[in-house]
Amino acid sequence: MAKEQKGVKLENITKIYKDYKTGSDFAAVDHINLDIAPGSFVTLLGPSGCGKTTTLRMIAGFESPSDGEIYIGSQAINELTPNKRDTAMVFQSYALLPHYNVFDNVAYGLKIRKMPKEQIREKVMAMLDLVELTGMEGRMTNQLSGGQQQRVALARALVVEPSVLLFDEPLSNLDAKLRVTMRTEIRKIQQKVGITAVYVTHDQSEAMAISDKIIIMNKGKIAQMGTPQEVYYQPQNDFVADFIGEVNFLEGSVTGVSDKKLTVSVAGKEISAESFGNLKAGDSCKIVLRPESVTLADSGDFKCKVLLSTFMGSYQYYQADFNGKMIKITEYNPRGRKIYKAGDEAYLAFDASNLHVL
Image 1 (cartoon, helix red, strand yellow):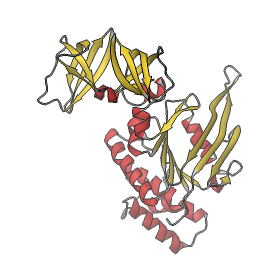
Image 2 (image 1 turned 90 degrees about the vertical axis):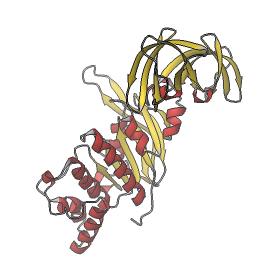
Image 3 (image 1 turned 60 degrees about the vertical axis):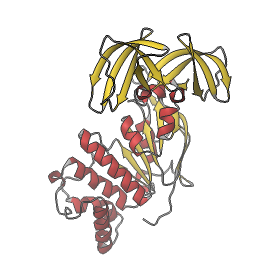
Image 4 (image 1 turned 135 degrees about the vertical axis):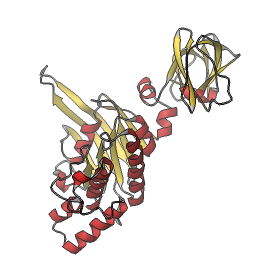
């Protein structure tokens, strides 16, 4: 696809709906600004009702913003109908035409554009090759598996050569194993084609696996935007820390600050940790401790009691009581390590470089 890559820009986008029960207005999307780089894969992630699907539908043209402007490349697109925008969408339900075979489903958008037959055939066959469906062009869509149907939907969206490909929870109808396979395929195809992709999901692991950037939304606003590593290791608030992966929060107080490094007192013991906030000495704080960043030991400063010990194959999962707070612990590759049992006394052990303070 030798086409100029275009990014997506949202300037102060707001979408107001009326709550018919109360009669009052509410903002499904609340003054968000986004700048999506050309050729990047960006995921809108968040719980139900956070505004991610509404945002995607406004980019597609299925919803109109109450305020703000949307751009694809340098072109403002608010006034354009969906079919006039340089976008294509892959839906959760696939939205395939059941009375058409695979070839005609993929060719549909090209036929509407009145492209010559020979050119249509060439483009469709090349696209079926890209999504690994060569030889299936004559099959009806109801003869395909869920994964194959999703590939047809992807080929149909890509064949019209949009600048921006939009995904509305495209894998939520597939079983867990197939979801993992398909998300890898989608990412591989996106990178091969070099298209800008905006993807909506509520599945954190899916977002982490495929994205260049993750935009975490909460109550119509952007809670944080960053690479998967940034949002996981350096969450900017409680919501992001808790929403992405498993997390433990330890209560502490700041006793010293120097060059983004903090000294924090936890249960009367001092530890060092990183912070990207504006904390100062004397502030109370929360320490983000991921379950894989903490282990159990026979000695140390932070005494705990094991509440649960479960062998999970690749890891041993513990729950431990520390000062009346339940701490989740994931010790990977437990073979050959000491296994603590429920009721055992132990100590929490962690590297200060794995701590992040809010």
